[in-house]
Length: 83
Image 1 (cartoon, one colour):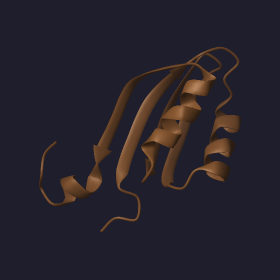
Image 2 (spheres, rainbow, N blue to C red; image 1 turned 90 degrees about the vertical axis):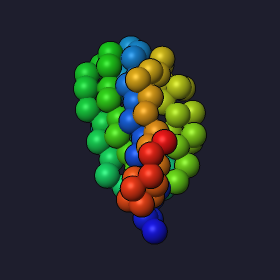
Image 3 (tube, helix red, strand yellow; image 1 turned 45 degrees about the vertical axis):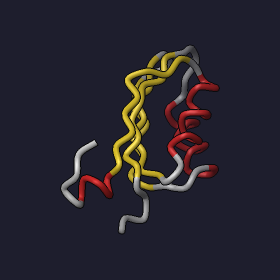
């Protein structure tokens, strides 16, 4: 079994976004690994493995509009299952 089950990816569109601040918040407040937060002050792509993707979505929504949201169950993938 994987420590962190859900591969969560999304885009955040807003103003005054800071990838370092986003990375720091996620690292300090959410449990997970494989964090990437890259972009500029108007668009950030986030990739994060977690067991609680809804917490990442709530935080991201507080920063701006979120879209292109993908939450994949890596445990199902590891077992060769789809969906």
